[in-house]
Every structure is written in structure tokens, then in C-alpha cells.
Length: 228
Image (cartoon, rainbow, N blue to C red; front, side, top):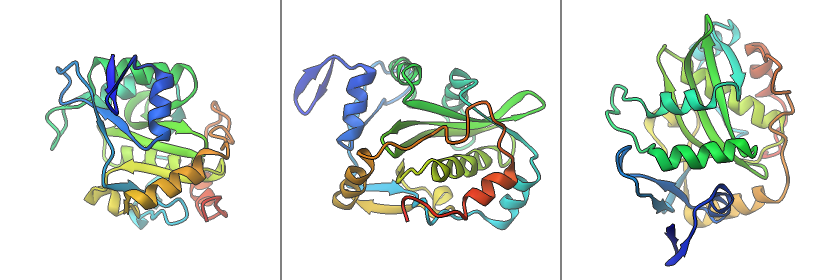
């Protein structure tokens, strides 16, 4: 049981989706803490889908197809990667309850992984929640240079191809700012969220098992966007 707005509720994947629709999301203090707390930031991180920036060097890497990008083939492994210690991140907020809840969302088709592979090894990726035409980015990781950045480029290309309207990053970091992330006051964020919840976007406008090349992904970024 978890308390939301002073009401004690059983936290299920379906309840979690309702929380996202209200603009809140859960986190844990650490992987060892079984509890969750709810966050609704005063200022929210958003990457405008029509304002996504790909640095020139990264664009060359994407176009060269140094990595293979897959969708939803190793969701649990992506969670493992996001939960693992990394330089600058010695502890994680992904505890067992987070794993169970987001695994449940994945099973019902509302949570996806974008995976970056090299020589059949998972070397980076990200995962997030899909609701209506909004995508809520949760976490990313890499074990090889640029792998998580390539995942982000392919994610945004897929969202644009599928007519998504909102990419929520929760917070803005210096890293995300390079890609065009902006800080959005809560009131403005809720307006964006409300506009994105009603229309249903298509995460699989590119079929799940279709290997999208870097050139295709970059071309999709220049196409008209539903968010524009």
C-alpha cells in the first residue's frame, strides 16, 4: 500500500499510470529502501520534440550505425544497467518495487526499452513510460561511449514518427540541456501534459522488430512533428 494525496491505495501498474496522468511519479531513496515517495517538481524537464538538438559529432556516430538499436528485447537488462553504479552515480533509486511496477507496465504495453547493442552485447539504453501521446523518460545507461546518446536520438526519432507530443525528462541536467531540454514551470507542464494525454500516438509506427538505421532516425528528426 502507498499513500497518494493522503489516500492509502494499493500501488499497481494501472494506478501508476493514473499518477503519471496527474503529473506525479515515484522514486525510492535507494535500491535498498523498500519504500517509495511521490514527486511533482515545481519545474519539470521537457525535451521539445520539434526542438531536439543532435550535436554534429553524435550525428556522425548515429549515421555510421556503429551500434544496433533494438526495441523491447531486453527490458529487464536495461533496468539492470540503469540500476548499476556508474561514474558520478554510485547509488540508484531503482529498488525492487520500482522493478516490479515498471516490469508490470512493460507487460501491459505501457513501458518500453530502447536498447543499444554492439556485437550482440547490450552496451547502453533507456526506458520510459508511454501514455497517450506522452513519453516519460525514466533512466538511461551506457557502458560504451555515446551508447545512451544514440538511444536518445532513436527514441526521439521514433516519437516524432509516431506523432507523440511530449517527452518528459523529469529533471534537466547539463547533459540533457545539450539536446534541447528545457525547464518548464508546473502550470505550463500540466498544460502540455493535458494536451498529450488525449490523442493516442503510435510507438510502433516503426514496427518493433524493424531495424531502423541511423540515417532513417536522423531523417525522421527533420520531418514535421505533431508537437510543432
